[in-house]
Image 1 (cartoon, chains in turn purple, yellow):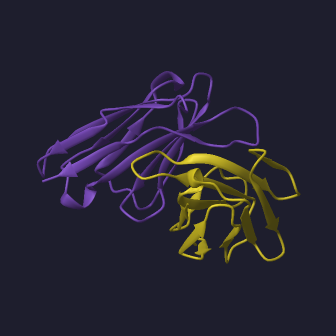
Image 2 (cartoon, chains in turn brown, blue):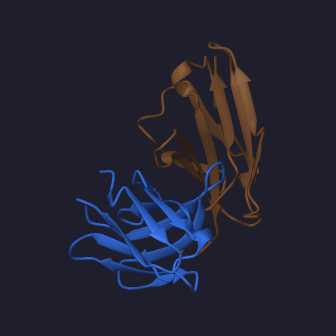
Image 3 (cartoon, chains in turn orange, purple):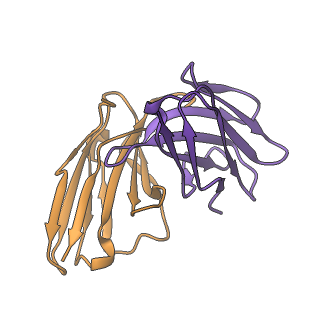
Length: 114
Length: 110
C-alpha cells in the first residue's frame, strides 16, 4: 500500500460528458503528479504540482483537461467534453520533500468513454 | 525523447538472472525504475542520479552510465514475484518530470 488514494477507481461515461477524478497524496508529500496510461504503454506525464502551484503541463494535454490542487493537499483532474480517445488509466503519484524524490503511485482511475 | 527499453519481453525460470536496459538520446539527470503488475499501480524500485547517488530496495541493483545515458536493472536469482512489467522513467535537468519507456515484460516460471 503506497498510501496514495484515487477516486473513483472506475468511471464509465458517455462521449461529451465531463468527468472529475480525485487524488489524495501521501501526507506531507509536496509534489503531486498526474499520468495517463494506455494498454501496453508506460505512464505518460500530464502535469505536476509543487504544493498548490502547477509547475508544468504537458503539451499533449488539450484545453479540455484541467487540474487543480487547492491548498496543496488533494488534487482533482477534470476532463471536459470527453472523447473516446480519453479512455485510459489515469494515475496519480506523489513524492516527498527533498530528494531523491521517488514517486509513489496510486491505484489509478480507469476511464471508459462510450 | 521517450527512452528505449530492451528487451521488450523476457521469460525466465525461477532462480535465473536478467538484465533490463534503458537508453536515452538526451542527457539525463536521473533514471527511475518501477515494476507494475497487471491491474496494479507501478511500484518504485530504484532511482539513480547523475553523480552516483542511488536509492532503492536492497534486493534490487542497477547502474547508470552517464556518458552513454544508459541504465541497467539487474535482477538476480529471480523469484516468481518478480514477474511484471518493468518501466524506466527518465528525467532531464532536475525537472521532476519523468518520461517513461514502453516497458519490459518479465515472466518468471517455476
